[in-house]
Image 1 (cartoon, rainbow, N blue to C red):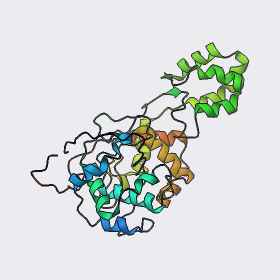
Image 2 (spheres, helix red, strand yellow):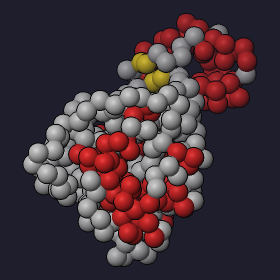
Image 3 (cartoon, rainbow, N blue to C red):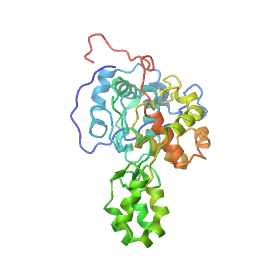
Image 4 (cartoon, rainbow, N blue to C red):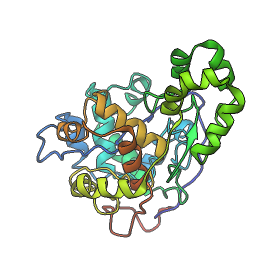
Amino acid sequence: MMRFKAFTQKVGVLFLIGIFFAITPLIGAGANQWGTKVQEALDALKIDGDPIDGEDLYDICAACHLPTAWGDPAGTFPQLAGQHATVLIKQIADIRAGNRDNPTMFPFAIQIEGAQDLADVSAYIQTLEMNPNPITGPGGPSFILSNLRKDVSPYSLDTVEKKVGKEVFKKLKTLEEQEFKTKADFMVKLKSLLTPAELEKNRADILTHADWTTDLNLGKKLYEKNCVECHGDHGQGSYKDYYPVIAGQTYLYLVRQFNWIKIGKRRNANPDMVKQINGFSQLDMRSVVDYAGRFKMQEGDWKKIKVDDDDDF
């Protein structure tokens, strides 16, 4: 991988928030059964992007995705580093054209002006080194009442309040962001906070919203059955067919996107995938992305970006 430079952050810029993929297969321009017909994307895919020019363009993205393009642990801003340039082109163009809803990003996405800029910034992002220690899921039992996760699934601390009422919620609020590695430990804490009657009445609702357990063995089975054909045997995707890299992606970002695909919020998701995951439970979804996010990319997984030997990358 090529090294990168630090950039001046522009506070408040949300240029590339969530621009690409999650676990969504993308059909290439050749097949195009459901993919974009945005002309600037089709034009950009024919251009050799210039990562030197793309570096300047990426400056407006660094405040949110960081100069490293590693995103944030909560997955609000996904890791972009190392993503296939073809995938980035497709998703930016879809947002600009209104084929993918992202009202926060849209005003900044339109600052990319035309096919050459699309190709350049996407080429630069692909050359950035991926996070060597990506944020993975729990890989086992995890019980946590959190609002940082409120956008990644229907389950959040705020949602619990509607179920248990204000008095019980005040007690549960004291546990916010505390993680318990076993159900037994979590139950011990609940018993110390709630009366027996409160616990008996609300136990099921609390556990439903607090249980973020993943099962890596289950995730492996689901991935091998449902994901390998498009995303590859180690999450490498395909630059030729615009299947995104999911190896090393932030766990909570993948959970969020999986949920959005399932409920139809990701309008440019592959319809076949929407049908495929329709029967997935929350445990299924969390487990498969926790498993997939632990993959590592390998040499040869990327299409090479053309740069001059004298270029400082």
